[in-house]
Amino acid sequence: MTNFISKLFPKNTPMSLLIKHNNILKEVTEKLEPLVDKYIKNEDIFELVKFISHKESEADKIKFELRKLFQKKIKTPYAATDMLEMLHKYDFLIDSIEDIAKKMSLNQIDCLDSEVEEHLKQLTKVIMKSLKYLEKMTQKAKKAINSSFAQKYIDDEINESIKIEDLEVKVDKISLKIGKWIYSHKHEHNTLDLIFLKELVMLFVEIADEAENTAELMNAFFK
Amino acid sequence: MTILILASIIGLAMAMAIGANDVANSMASAVGAKAITIKQAVIIAFLLEFTGAFFFGKMVTNTIRKGIVDPQLLTDYRIMIAGGFAALIAASFWVFIATVFSLPVSTTHAIVGGMTGFGIAALGWGSVNWLIIIFIVASWFLSPFLGGLLAFGIFKLISKTILHKDDPLSAAKKIGPSLISLTFFIVMLMFLKKGLHMDNLMFVLAISIITGIIAGFSGYFLLKGIKKKKDDNGYDAVEIGIFRNLQVITSCYVSLAHGSNDVANAIGPLAAIFVAATTQTVETTATIPKFILALGGFGIAIGVALWGHRVMKTVGEGITELTNTRGFSIDFATATTVFLASVLGLPVSSTHTVVGAVTGVGFARGIEALNISKLKEIALSWILTVPLAAVTAAYLFKFFKVMFIK
Image (cartoon, rainbow over all chains, first blue to last red; front, side):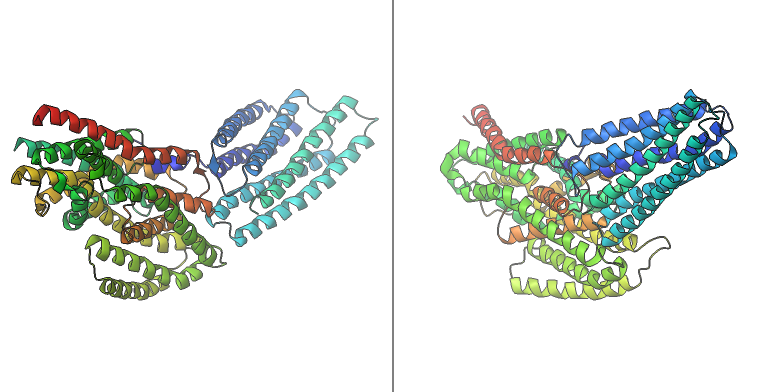
């Protein structure tokens, strides 16, 4: 037995679905560190890759549900296009983590020394930190809506996005170090392995860039 | 005797349908915002709907009984009995259909449609009080618009003066007593004017102002004691500590007012049948026996207890986005609009006003997602209620006339 008042409210709100999607991003982000560790140690990563792929398809279902929600006429206190763009960005982040996992399962680089291993681990940690701030921003977005967009919450969101921007700069610096390492070892190691490592690092960099873009979009979202 | 038993059964069924469907509408925002549990809502509705119907339902019942079709134009009391049955069955049928399809139709409008259809079929177009019909058509636009406007304003006020402040709890402690005062003023005003039908406006205003002032002062001291919890930045204390309690009061009032107004929809025609059958005349001055009001009140209360909780469960689980500030804005706007309309003599539906109030809060950026596409469906059901109930009642009346009178 339904009631018309319930019919006026969709079962899920766009933000609650985005948070659900973001929770999946959180789950796959937590797997980044063990994934990189195992890869460096040349251990089996099959289970981790399987887990991330499974989560990616779960995220796709939520993405589909959120898009479907906007096919009906829904009145929201923000622009639907902003919400859909944000969803697209979150999805890109999950896809990129899946790409990293799948790429790692294709080839094992044998030439990594302790210096580049340390850079890779550091890069992973910074990326995870950046995504953690993004997760916080998403959770706070719900609070901002509940407070009817109180300035206090909007300021909080801006502060978090500044932290993500700073981390993006850090990621760039680390990626440059790895880049230098790659070119300084071009005569010593297998070229394919070096290209593979460069591509892998580029995927990490893309995640940091997209996290920064998502944070900026989130700030614009409430204005 | 058979006629009275049959009419009582149909009247009781209509009252139960009102209890099952309408009550959930009036309590929806309170249950949705978790101001009250489903069990509490059922108990409040059971007690207050009955109280409202039994003690304050008489005046509205008289309007339904003789306000739409002039009984003095009827020469045969059997026509009144047949017409009462036709109106009651037609209205119950459309309320039932609306319940099945979850359409928020007004039971008031359904019964007015039923009585109008009977009037036209029995005595022609001139026998109907068309002013009431014009008011009803106006109320399709007026009640949701006024409810929406008021809810928009109240929520914006709460946002600006409380939610947007750095310390919402301190702000609420300053603004809260005024809101409490205003709530009690409105509730008392409506109770005296609509519930007790007091005509002395100055007296009613004086009592309401005094009640508001006392409530405001009491509220000031009660709010003083509210403290933030450890991880709360003040919002939870505002929502739960202040607005949740205010919403309990407005919900109780909405329930009482609903019982006093909507019992007439079930027992108005029943009262007409009773008077016609017992006096064998079309009496306009006969008083409505208390047992008929009790039957209506009992029916509403039973409807709430048997099916209302199921509807409320859907509401409680379905609406997760309503916080107490939003719920209070909706309830307050609904109660005030219904009161203002009743002062102006407009037969507005609280169901229609709730829809407007929810939309108003949505437009004030208070609700994250509002299904605008449903509004069209809802508006269509409002417009169709009166003609459909009228046509059904007219055909039923013709049938009863052929079968039992001529």
